[in-house]
Image (cartoon, rainbow, N blue to C red):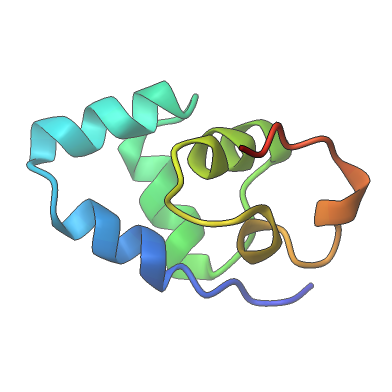
Amino acid sequence: MREIDFSPLRLFLKGLSEEEKVKFASECGTSLGYMRKRMSLKKPFGFLIAKEIAARGVMTPKQLRPADYGNYIWDEK
């Protein structure tokens, strides 16, 4: 499994207050703790979480799931 470069997501989160980070994670269907864990492990998020991150324009589907992004429908704008 490829390591994921989460630097765009890290940079995005860095610009948010702690409350905004928690809200963002919740809106993506996860917790901030889980989001941080996946980023530290450099492992991809599950599709539903990745889809929500991509829908918010923080990272692209290819960045989030490079090994299998083409297998899913992403609702890209």
